[in-house]
Image (tube, rainbow, N blue to C red; front, side, top):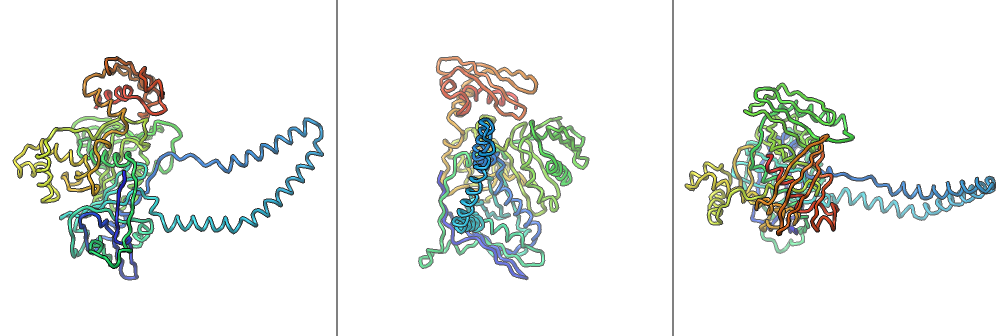
Amino acid sequence: MLFNYKYGGSSSVQSSASSTGMSFAPDTLREPTFFVGQLGKHIHFREAISALHDVVISDMRFKPKDKTEYLEWAKKQEDIWLSEYIGEKIGAKDEIENKIKTVREELKQVNAERQKVMGPFNKAKREYFNYIYEKDRDAWFVLDPVITVHPDEIFFECFSQDESTYGKLGCNYNVFKKINEFECGTTNIDYSDALYKEFQKIRNYKETEFKVDPSGFEVATENEDLYKEVKIDLPDSWVRGFLQVSSAMTLGGATFDLHPMDIYNICLYLRRYKEKHGPRSMKYILKPGEPIKVILEPWNYEINCPRSIYNGTEEKEIRVWGRRRILILERLLPVAKKFTITLMGTGLPSFYVADLGDMNFTLGLSGWTANDWSRAGNFDLMAPRMQVDDITKKTVYDALKENWVEDVDSLANRLGLGTDVVGGALSAYTQAGRAIYDMNLKKYRIRELSREPLPMDALRFSSPQEGKATQLIDAGKVTVQATENDGILKLTGTVRDHHKTYHPEVWIDKDERITKGSCSCNFYNMNQMRKGPCEHILALRMKFNRDNK
């Protein structure tokens, strides 16, 4: 999916002994959106924007070690060992050892000459790549952050490189001691690693001007060369992940508050220890009227949270994965008042909202870190939850755009519609990337993720098999039975598809991953599990998840 941006220059920071000026270059292809103000709460903003940067660069996918150098060494060493072994066998050990010694001396001289000749080239190559790494770090970021200006606050959004972590920083206007001008809307801002380093220079004693530069939208014909055009080809899975997490915000879940020291204790243990085997989950024990307990597996280490009491009405036990992403919150601990946690369920997305006073930071985590086919079909957050006709949806959207931010009840009263209709319409726009649910204020906001409408038919499902599995479930053609043995969940059942009945089986481990599956369909017989599960195996998994929500 190709995204086009045109920036009026580059974002920059000018810093002196007494003042700092931050100027963000917006995307001039969008509707004019700008903001100019003087920062009032310097340290809180510095820590929060730095945490957002940690989301932007986050990539916790498994990276295998590079063994190229070792393999080259092993190949050379194998020849040496082989010659030594042959020499011992034929009895000419001394003579061969002398020859080997002579060859090694000659090889040493050749390598020295080679280094002498190639040395300047290798040095220049290293300097070149170091320059690229330092000066062109933009290539490391998949998509520049999205910034939205509203009548009551300005907020940044970003998504991680591993497609599993969402970050949002909201700053209401009390964060600024002086606001000169602003225009509501959404735009992408030019962002670089150098900009992050300049953020670290923000101090209380220095006046700091914050600017989403309005001059970038002025018509310029003489200085057209100052504009920077960027084209980024994003995988559908990246955009789909962003929409999945955003859509998940509109769904309910178990909600409770944690004291910053409780988050600190979790991060401290994760910093001190590294798991070597599964399950790598974090289990929340929620009992009404009692302190919240957190159990870190596989050590089964229990963290009691005496400062945090669960006020819910039902006892719950919820497991989440990808827990090391919570370390992003460490930077916020000194300035946070509390963390509001929302857990949708076991293996489903979770949200951590940090209360920073006049700012709020939302960390949205998908149900897992590795967003691959082994977890496909775990949930479908982008499924329509209520059918609303297009005219009504547009009416609701236009009404929301009048105020930019509003809750469902207020919109329903103003339009004379039912709250279920308004909620369904807003959920549809959230799924399409045109609105966002503010978990801090419990209200919907206008936010256009992209300039052009997103192709929702292509984004809803991660594969054709997942789409077919959803159709089979909706048609009532799937039955499932579950058995568990030594922590391994086995699902069996029947799937009726095109006048045939299939009997798929699937095994799921303690980390909620599909470890093995079988089916008699043609897709499975041709590919086994090399291209992921077939629609019948996925239907079994998805049906079980729906029945056990």
